[in-house]
Image 1 (cartoon, rainbow, N blue to C red):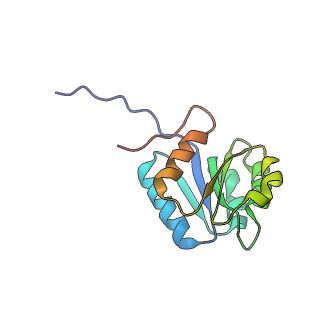
Image 2: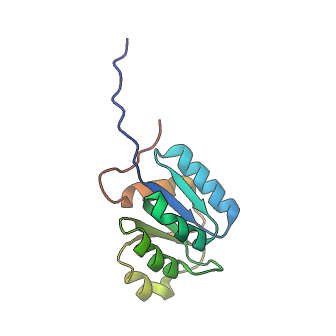
Image 3: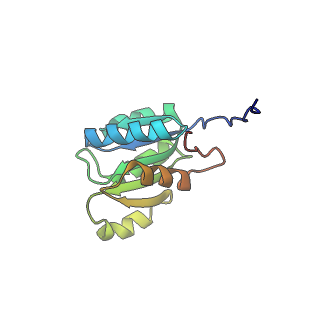
Amino acid sequence: MKPARKKTAAPSRSVVIVDDQKPFVDLMAKMIGDNLDCPVHPFTRPTDALRSLPKIAPGVIVTDYYMPQMNGIEFIREASALAPEAVFIIVSGHDLDMFDDELSRLKRLRMRIQKPFGWRPLAEAVIQVWPGKDTPSFRE
């Protein structure tokens, strides 16, 4: 008989994904949710995400740069006040080098990821930048 494995508690904080491309958000949320032991909250409208942030305790917020309602920099500025413990990853299919000055002023922006990418690099990035000791792990 195998000894019981000690199971660590899943993080109480979540991953938030904000991108105006619904198929991308749905796929990333499903893949991250299926493979990391933490809740995932997908949003296609940054304003909906901002309204929800105080209720969902995000650890990492992944946001696209180019969105119709507001860009990723504006979103990070507003979300930082609503989720003071969260850190951010910004993603884009465009070159963000022209925004280096603005991006460098975002104190909790931890990483940039160039689209296209798969779920695994995103999951690994989430684990790498996760704030605190309740870092999610890959599900078995």
